[in-house]
Amino acid sequence: QVQLVESGGGLVQAGGSPRLSCAASGGTFSGSAKAWFRQPPGKEREFVSAISGSGGRMLYADSVKGRFTISRDDAENYWYLQMNKMKPEDTAVYYCASRAWGDSPYTTGYQYSYWGQGTQVTVSS
Figure 1 (tube, rainbow, N blue to C red):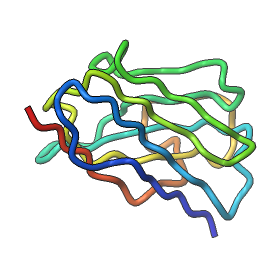
Figure 2 (figure 1 turned 90 degrees about the vertical axis):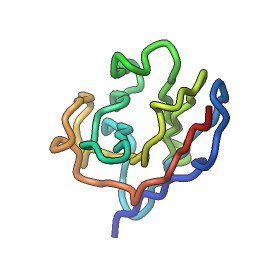
Figure 3 (figure 1 turned 90 degrees about the horizontal axis):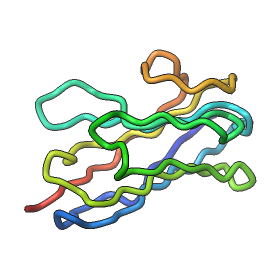
């Protein structure tokens, strides 16, 4: 059974630099694209970042471009979201996601078959 588990969330000061991790188990994940999405309070889920299966192509939402960095470690079945210069508007539940197969990263959630349970990130001003 495939399981994705996020960690690294919590309360962060504005300007802080937390890192989220996603641990995958129960399947073969190397070579498939990975992503991070988030759902701010009272809003729809939104795309944050994605990385191709090869790791050579990254996508970012305009709101996080230049502040967040996505990376992956296929040997350990992990991927990460380094978040810098956090703002109160980054407050959300953050979800990691993985395609079942396929190198191409996408910004749309339906392309991803597996999802974590989410981790809350709250940015205080």
